[in-house]
Length: 465
Image (cartoon, rainbow, N blue to C red; front, side):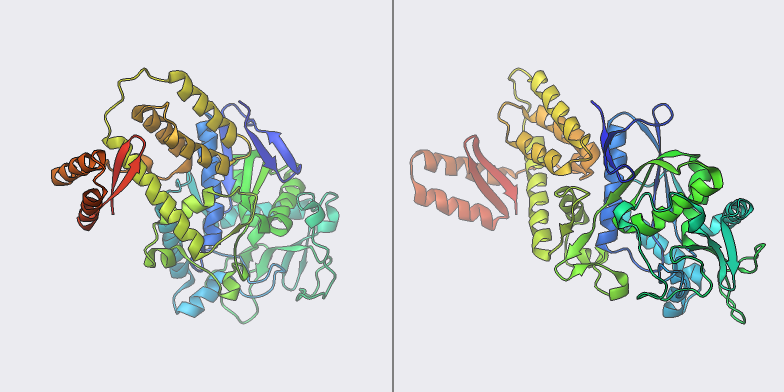
């Protein structure tokens, strides 16, 4: 079954095949580590993880590189303002290096809690200063740069297809229009390759270069690191939709100008997680972190489950009520898994054909541009399917979880104390005699002992309250 992915570059679903053999080279834009990742950021990283898991489910090997931006990301996309890391250092009265390391550790803790697989390789921007300088030298030699008092800039007018990724989203800026424009820039879309340290100012993060002491621009790091570790072009580049018109557009520009090649074959972008007040933004102080959820007694995997309920290219609205609903759904799922694990294998003939057909349907859904809502609905259909034995259900659910990442295999089977079992048997006797009053009294007694009873056509099911 062909795997189809929506390619932002072509604006359509395309059949995905690795450029070389069965190995996929994947680059995902990582965090700028000056503050905690908010749950909107984390939606993008869960999307990246689901993509990787779907690729692996389809039998591909994946070399996954994720960057850590620890220098060069300014507070404005127009190459003005302060470096976010240095700003964080002032805020916390620490060194820029300490701030970057602290929030890198915090980010890695968050993705572990969300059961996101670690990349094959982490790359930090500050470890690749030489590679970034070398890239700028190539661009300079080919005539795509110019230097002004502020730094070295990429001349976008020299590249015929600049902005091809953004298409209709391409920025149409006029000098001085609602943004602070760097003096000396030739074109509003031109971007910094190397920023010079201001005179009489010593930054914590600055390096010597052929153009003077300074630091690399944000858009240069990903090109330098991706080309070094994945080659050119590589298979897939991902990020949030906010990266399309500027960051990824500028990455493509550098790659094509320097090497005459596309940076990546496929470009995939995840949509926003929104609040009732609008999009989450650290600059507007309206963020919710995973730590906030944990403090409110939410399972981090309830957030992952929430992300599964919506397609990655659709906006998803967050509310505490919605998260409570997904936490309940996840608890119910774990409860049913526990029940299945506690049941003995049915002696009936195995429905091998049914299992195969269900797996084919699951593969069909996830291979259709990662359609997780349909795949998740299929999971619940499996749980309700009376034709499948407990063993077959476990096989299917654990197989699906290779993609979902909800840790279903780690759910403990439900063990019911002997005393509770005796009360259940007695209650069933009263129910058979239609002595509803005594049966109800036993239900209440069982509940006080910490167990709930759910009556089904197959008999009573018990769960831990």
